[in-house]
Length: 223
Image (cartoon, rainbow, N blue to C red; front, side, top):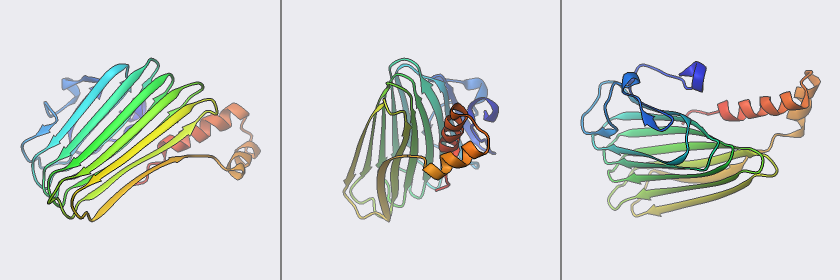
């Protein structure tokens, strides 16, 4: 997974999707409906090339379960990726890193619903938007009534070509007092000093662009 998709793996129960298709030979769990507690963390890996409509539903119904999501996908045709996360497990901890590379027309939606107190859903999404592309990214965090003490964060950031069009649509529906509830969207712009440093190191213009793209996609700080 690291060599092909830049996905870090660790000791965990796994659920793997390639090109939007479930891969039972790479998975140790048959589905993403968690109705039992696993001794190890659960790692959901969603990689490859997508097109048309792709959906990933993650339903957490057990307490104290750590779950990680790693998404690394690209689209060369129009595509819609929808990720729905429902955490009904008290003190269950969900953390997701999503990397999107758009070569055409891409719509992405992430809905994160807390239905249990003291639950966590943290999702960071990065978009690399290429020339003349259209990207629409939406995210909704929902904290249901009586779900106090939750930690919620849906964050978007993008690095794009000057000709790319990007639309962010964040939303929050909070019906209980959370521990934390954050939501953000930003456009990354490399500084002049960063570009100059790379040029002084002997990189060509194209090599500088590639280095900045790699740094942007790989710089995922831990929650």
